[in-house]
Length: 398
Image (cartoon, rainbow, N blue to C red; front, side, top):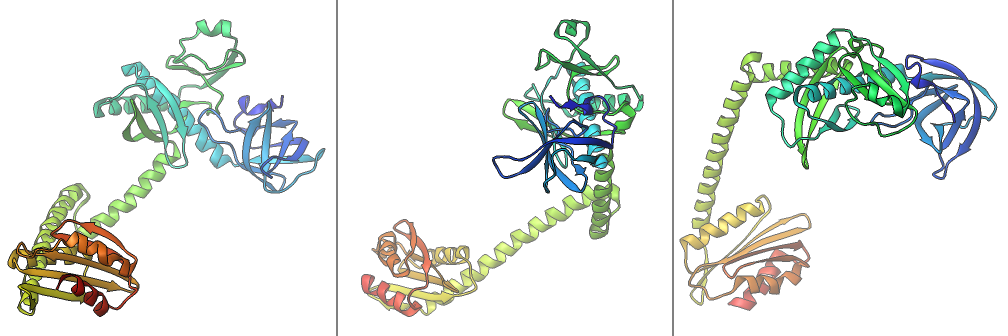
């Protein structure tokens, strides 16, 4: 087994090693196995380390068949003595997030007996899934407060290897998933947990913790949080956004919500008025179309071509036409580029099933559509000119 030195001293940034194996896996990826390593492989909800082995970039680290494989962009040579360097910013961020999870999970367990059943360390935020179907805002705030209190107390973080027989000596937060080579991560008088991840040596190094949001996840609750430097980065991002909103809304920070709410309400009212104005225009347009309708066989035939209107517009226009004239039969067409759309509708005195009519003429545009006997619509490809399309329609009904 490759020595797992990241367990012993997670603060190591560079080290020397010899390459025991340099191969290509079944997916064509280069990897090497070292005689010793401080790179952390993916596991326990924590992502792998990145860095370099000599000049070869380490892009993944996985434990496979009891060996730690360092996947690199370039091939390296067996027997070569190398200098390895770990991306410390990434490593320390993972240490802060993982330790933050221990502290938050312990706070939730001690305050409310909510047990953490899974943990994920993401690039932007971290999540824990809690074995409960609900959690209140007050409970989250209290857990966050206790977590930050533990962080500020600068408690030491200890690690210890124990046997299964020794487990009963410790008030473990949950039962370990292994029964040998058990590694405890201990925050004295607060949290005792079996874990193989990397952690700082004191809680103060976590710096701070912030719960971001909560969501329902099946029968559990998922809590999104960040710790350490990520809290400052999030604060910087939110501060930039707040400044921009303050300028855009011309309001002080403490009135942004009130101003934004008022703005949204005004926008809704304006949108409502705009719809009313658009409907008025369409109603007037329908009157104009009826004045120029082609009267045949007791039917007022209306047809027109548009290129700027939407399908919703001509559906409303068709509705206004049949409301204003019981004898109307209308075909309203939109042609944009190669796209052909239309609505066909009729008044109550016209004995034509427009759904059947539409289905009969859809092959002319290689289209699809349907509706009911009063109004139907379709769409397809502009395969024939508008005039010919109308002529084919007229042949079937007039």
